[in-house]
Amino acid sequence: MENVMNSEVDIKALMKQIGKQAKAAAAKLALAPTAQKNDALINAAAEIRAQKKSIMTANNKDMAIAEGRGLTGAMLDRLKLDDARIEAIAKSIEDIAKLDDPIGDVIDTKERPNGLQISRVRVPLGVVGIIFESRPNVTADAGVLCLKSGNAAILRCGSESAHSSRAIHKCLVTGLKNAALPEASIQLIPTQDRAAVGELLGLSEYVDIIVPRGGKSLIERVQNDSRVPVMAHLDGICHIYIDEDADLEKATNITQNAKLRRTGICGAAETLLIDKKIAADYAPVILSRLQDEGCEIRADKMIKEIFPAAVEASEEDWTTEYLDAIISVRAVDGVQGAIDHITDFGSNHTDSIITESAEHAEKFLNEVDSAIVMHNASTQFADGGEFGMGAEIGISTGKMHARGPVGLAELTSYKYQVRGNGQVRP
Image (cartoon, rainbow, N blue to C red; front, side, top):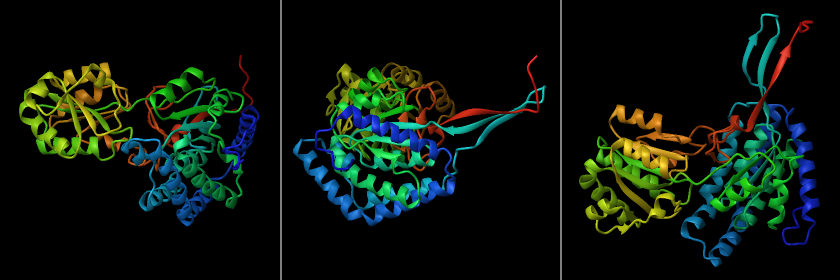
């Protein structure tokens, strides 16, 4: 299927074939021993290193096309691969190989009065469809996480990363071949025709769950159109709240990192909240640092009076995921005011409080209803690799099945195994 990227194909037939192959592969992967899956991963990592030049050549094609389309600097940064990022992809695969295999884990056991032994055991989800946009590393992250957790993966990359994703995918397939696992364990949809997404969302006979990872319009389409259960990854409208008891140097460094380390990732801070009690002293220091590094400041009336160089914020700014060097800033009435703002405008992704007050920190951690809530740490740590998961498919902002970084355990379900000795129910 590698050569049909730009040819006319019967999309419905193509996607049905992909679904059938994935389901057959999933049945074998569910029973594959850990050593065999790890062998595939280690071989894939070695192949990525061996094919670094071809991956870079493919990425250069994607970058040239993206620049021609006028993509923003942040989006280009998400797309770009270099020696360090390719090595990070290979290293991440090796890290996942070192992690414990969740399949077969006994979550709990109990014995009933009648002697029945009941165990709850982890099993794969089955076939996972992942739809993502510009980040080519997701091809590897999603594919290998599914493989290690015994799931078959159907990957649909965005047109921006098509060449890069194909080059990485070839390396994963080589790893599968060398480990004698089905090549269909990790499939990359070979066409950029948008009809393929619609067909994937309707493959309820073959696909067990869909994981969309991208912009708001993509997520909304998937949630509205899918006949397959969806594990949602919504907007990353992440907040930093500077409390009245915050250490100024700590607050400045964390805010700078949370906003500007990489502006195009979902864990980048988009809104800064500052306690009114310390705004006059803290805002000029923190905002000057951001502005000096090229960040546009959009502020409410109080902050703009304190920091006149800011642009006046609109109501829309509080619900905007910029993915760029722009931040909205608001003065709030203490920790409760910050919680109220996040409740009204947040996306349940990642929010952080900067404070030396244990009481305020606990209130924030307990009352902010987001997938990840932090104290005195940058929101850019919202990442499966940083959580010790090796990698992630995405950050789930919903509450069904998985929440936060989606790693190996989150790609499993469970079944009950009941062992008896002739019991019959009266």
